[in-house]
Image 1 (spheres, one colour):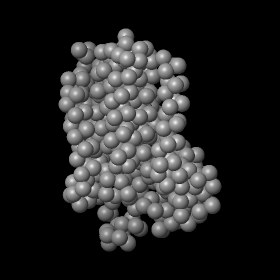
Image 2 (tube, one colour):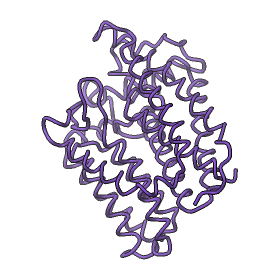
Image 3 (cartoon, one colour):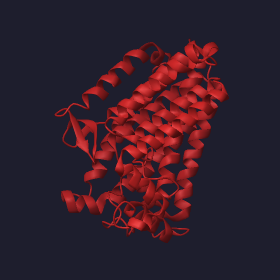
Image 4 (cartoon, helix red, strand yellow):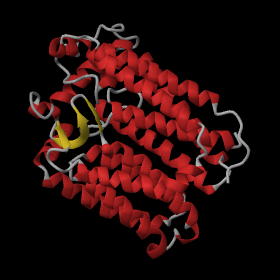
Amino acid sequence: MPSKKSNPDFLLIMVTLALLAVGLMMVYSASAIWAEYKFHDAFYFAKRQFLFAGIGIVAMFFIMRIDYWTWRTWAKLILLICFVLLILVLIPGIGMVRNGSRSWIGVGAFSIQPSEFIKLAMIAFLAKFLSENQKHITTVKKGLLPSLGLTFLAFGMIMLQPDLGTATVMLGTCVVMIFVSGARVMHFVMLGLMGIAGFVALIISAPYRMERITSFLDPWQDALGSGFQIIQSLYAIGPGGLFGLGLGQSRQKFFYLPEPQNDFIFAILSEELGFIGGTFVLLLFALLLWRGIRIALGAPDLFGSFLAVGVISMIAIQVMINISVVTGLMPVTGITLPFISYGGSSLTLMLMAVGVLLNISRHARL
């Protein structure tokens, strides 16, 4: 059981709220023109983001007060519910299709994305499994195969939507957790080779993924098609310079960069706030990563350590992928920037995950 409670990590709370404040500001700035044109309400996206931010903050502080061992008790049931939701979302009439993916369940503008929540469910279950079976993790049959088998099952179900970006974040998070638990490096080398072959097969099997690869290598080859987003993103980042054009002064949000409040919001942030503003946001993420690592190292038991590693890995991987895509270092994947991009399910999930970290910090030796 966890040790005696103390105060939660104050710096982690402040960094999270700072990122959230930047996100709310940038969602309004990036979306106002598009929202006014489409919905005749400049605050359309900002109001919804503010609502989900409120729900997420309440969830964060509520979960912060729940002993993290509760996640160990209910991990199997939570994961089962998430798998059921992943099945339901694939049924026509229940699942909602957006941007070519059947990933949402809900009514109208208010919906949830089950693939977001299974990331946290997988983290909790794997933390439980790895803490109970660490002595077997170096073996394939009792350690590696069961954990990776469940991970690939979840990966496959998310890919049926299809949602390669979310599936990649979940897979990367689980692999980090398994590696940290003490799995053999040679096993990961073999799995890495298999994974590369699998990703190549996934890319070849879908023409739109192949277009993303070719547009990544040479976006100007199809400047008005598959390369359009990355070109407009670079056109936003470049003019931002050192100090930016000024808050609200972006040019690319005037219908050049599609839906700029979503995956490419960091491009608008860099355009308006410049290199200084972008660096400030990255430093906030670095602080959050540092506090997460400290909490994982100071957790009183293996379950708490693995749970913290999973949460901070999920956030870090998502940040790295999003920034890499926006700056042209990776093909477009459709991954949101945690706490910053518009999206109710992603924002709520991230704040819930921070709530788990904060509870572990109440028992950790920091």
